Image 1 (tube, rainbow, N blue to C red):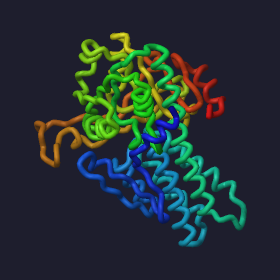
Image 2 (image 1 turned 135 degrees about the vertical axis):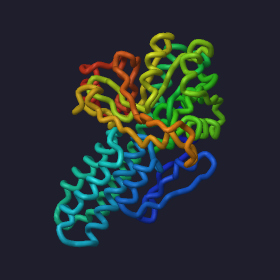
Image 3 (image 1 turned 180 degrees about the vertical axis):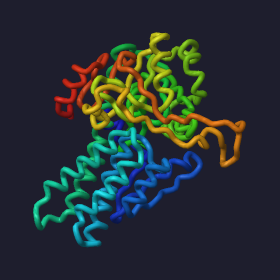
Length: 358
């Protein structure tokens, strides 16, 4: 199956070439494929903030490449470039507060920097490290796809209807996708009848991005309004909800796109299994439980306006980007290190002690 999945890799959201980072502008999809060239850490930070690139793994990869760009610029400027670099790191860290992969990638790059010896080619070695982070995420996607589809096959082998929320595909990662990686694998294994994709208000990542990715692969997909999910579980034979994650706490609580929590509650009521698929870099063992996760809120205009035109009455709006799904509502967390069944603090700690499976 691994060869089939590799052959099916068609969508890329991140490219590193000619000494610059190129990001597929996800705000313009699915109608226009436009690439933004980023030649500085500041431009990458703005792209992350403005949702040009999104999805926790993709944000982390972008931050790693931005670190390389920052080091190059500081070296050229001369002086105490290592001290000056902290300004760039702080700028990147402030771009999105919830996606822990951002901070993980910056920490990895900082640690690599600290291991450099006098006379080393700092920019060159850090570029190798960033490319390694990118490639590692791609490999993790493939491993998680195999583990996730094994769960689907084990628990119900016939063709199934799956439901997903937001976009956790190639656009959100460095490779095949996390949640969509599992869904793609299920399709290739003949286990999938149809995918139902929540539209995912207010940025419509489900209808604009997830549906676009799946349709391009010839995978049967139907878009539904977010509030129809419980109805679909009751009437359309949904067997699994499969989602990604932006941060997973040490006890297994999961921060993901707003609306994930209510999906988990509805899944529990309807007897639908709930799977979270994310690389181990998304697990934050320094955060004890989900209540400690900083949840980003964005501008009210994203709810109150459409195409710059006001569509709501003269009222305020609350626009939280993420919510936290308690661990006791989650059946499986799938990572490249393995699978956690009914996650809790002890099981998460055991997982993080393992090495990668492949």
